[in-house]
Length: 320
Ligand SMILES: Nc1ncnc2c1ncn2[C@@H]1O[C@H](COP(=O)(O)OP(=O)(O)OP(=O)(O)O)[C@@H](O)[C@H]1O
Ligand SMILES: [Mg+2]
Image (cartoon, rainbow, N blue to C red):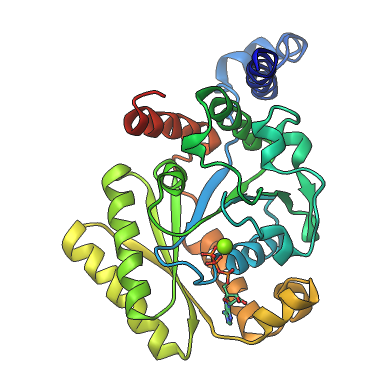
């Protein structure tokens, strides 16, 4: 156990060092700068990934199918995308993407592999961090393992423009840790009244925990445009009225049989049915995210997420 703890700490500090090396110019780079450049050039901009957590109040509304196909659509528009399966109960993102990675998050929490080593290439150049079914709740991991996992997530900043995190549903502490820490939270709902109520509950909790985060909404499995629009308007107007906050509506994905068919074929619908209504809708949302609702001016990247996750656990577990 002691050896493992030591290994995990070493992994965490190795990640820290790698990140520093990736973001600070080397001595030789610096010395080759002219004096004028050194004076007028602002400090090298640290590139940070846009971190978007995809979640829902009610389970089974289509988060995983949506996140995996959205990640492919975001890659089509030129983004370097990493998608993380943070559903620690039922990890199935890789199944929807039709890939079977050798390593997953459990190897990271055990200290066997760094996060960089478990990244698995997927279609369209995306990379995936596969989840592990039945992985203990983040909150239940001992502090050292949790710290190793949180630290290692920081590596992703240098490797991606967008990090999409597919979470489990609901208000479990484990899910909330990701939601309350992410710069942007994309809530998926169906038009059903129960799903809308649960979507609002998530929005309210995230808003109270992290009022700075940008809240976004997508309606899935709508029967038609009118139903989708009415669902969006209900959530947006309730959040405006009771929380005084704006939820950005990204659009909707229709109910489309190709979604289930694509999973059965082992090939995401964006690739296997590229001109289906679902694929066109997901591309439109990717376009919205990239151009109409681009990253907020101050992207804190995965580093910001980590700090807030640590604070979340300190608050809710008293530092355990
Ligand atoms: N737009 C859609 N049209 C038709 N079926 C859909 C659509 N989106 C998702 N589904 C179906 O809904 C079911 C649940 O999808 P998915 O697993 O993506 O949901 P989830 O929100 O990730 O679930 P969980 O809460 O268990 O993580 C699947 O059978 C999927 O095929
Ligand atoms: Mg899911």
